[in-house]
Image 1 (cartoon, rainbow, N blue to C red):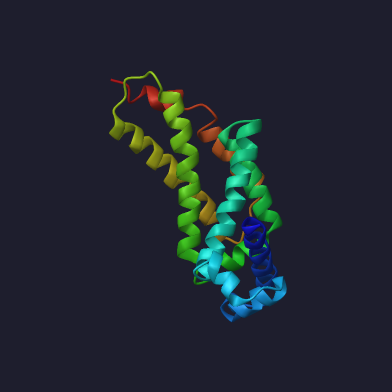
Image 2 (cartoon, rainbow, N blue to C red):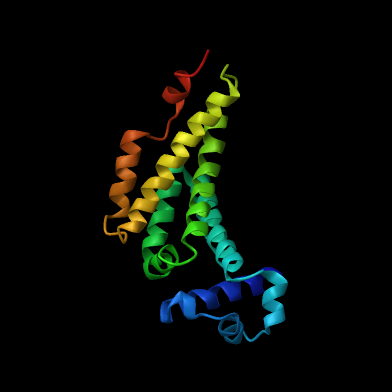
Length: 184
């Protein structure tokens, strides 16, 4: 039940962001749409930042899990950016708001999770230093997160498909070549 209430609160927040500036949205606005009181909101979330972070993480986690079931990490990026394009006005409102820093941190965490999991899986059984694994993950994380943030900064004018094609060309789905360079 709590998950359902949290989801309803986030959907209310999302629809309000589509209607008015983020800075004008109150907790009362959010709760009135759901038909709950402010205490219910504060039972689940500390504030609007916490609500936004929860909703975006849910969104990215679902996209990542769907993609990992059906393919490679680049598929996760492709599916996530495609969904992001469909939510353009909401995502850009968050990105260009007082929540930008937290939003960007969530993107970095998502990117880190993807690469940390993949690089460590590919490096199993290899003689590679932990600090080298961490370095590979950092470079890939900052690269992907930076590309996504630049895309958002530019208003998502470039097709997500082009970004994914370029990323696939540069990095690909395989990391063995990168890992091999660090094996001692």
